[in-house]
Amino acid sequence: MATITTWFTLGLLGELLGTAVLAYGYTLVPEETRKRYLLLIAIPGIAIVAYALMALGFGAIQSQGHAVYVIRYIDWLLTTPLNVLFLALLAGANRGDTVKLVVLQALTIVFGFAGAITPSPVSYALFAVGAALFGGVLYLLYGNIATAAKSTLSDIEISLYRTLRNFVVVLWLVYPVVWLLGAPGLGLMDVETASLVVVYLDVVTKVGFGIIALLAMMDLGSVSETDEEMTAVAGD
Ligand code: RET
Image 1 (cartoon, rainbow, N blue to C red):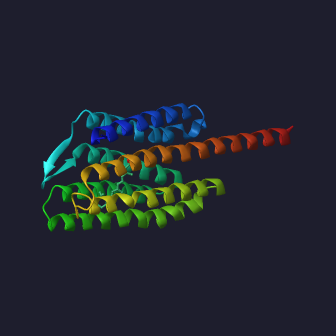
Image 2: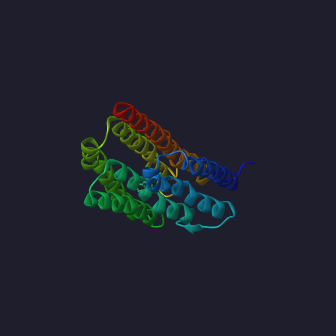
Image 3: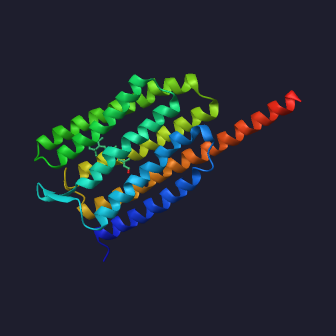
């Protein structure tokens, strides 16, 4: 029978494969975007470590009568701020909004973890604070940061920003739902089912985000090369 260890092992394989593909992609993106591109490799790269540890049986604590995967929250604490940082850098957002975005996202995870290890009803209050902070992340991604994207980027880049942002919003909203339905909340979903859903989402959100960005950045590279060639021809 498939156990939680099976899901963690599948997660590990997904993150390994994704990281390998994204690492190869480093050679395909324009040189001036490579530094930023490293974030996209680090995101599933960190998850490799997290999943390897979880598949080996580390990182779970018993709290309030259920298992809490501490390593999973550490993974999210490190990687989700990197995801939003990538969006802010892509948008050319100012430093103040970028810092706000990253800090709000990190605090969302901290409060979700605090809620998972606290008895109800305080757990729900902590969850609510986490959800409100995440509301702040969404507010910035649709507000100031989207405005920055519109004022600094080309049409193709704006559409990449929008695609990645919508991808994040739609998929990430499933996490608080799993928290609420799972053991820390209402207990309607057992720990194994919740793990399966989270492993699947973790791979799709981390690797999918990277691949969407990689493909768009490759396109941008070839567009600017064509531009340069055209300028060169025009200059002849
Ligand atoms: C918690 C509970 C508190 C309220 C909210 C949450 C949101 C978590 C999110 C997690 C995203 C994780 C990703 C992992 C990729 O591997 C902490 C569950 C809003 C958005 C993208």
